Length: 99
Image (tube, rainbow, N blue to C red):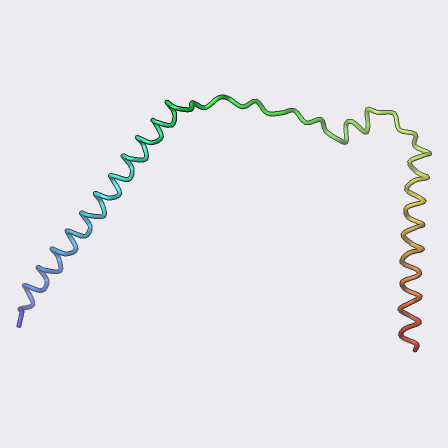
């Protein structure tokens, strides 16, 4: 049977080799990533992308001349249509509940 000291020594050796292997692998991964980044910069350098200026919809509406009375009429018609639609649904529900 192995002694306690030799087991501890073997455990330390396995841990040392395992940690060394992981350290070497991660170091190699960093070096390869840096190399690939440099290669890509050489092949396709970054070109500055200018942001597209999108006009603000609110400022466009404020700048354009809107017929306020026409807008109010359209909104009123939409609200009344919505109320009629919901009123019919409510009446159907009440009728179904009473049956």
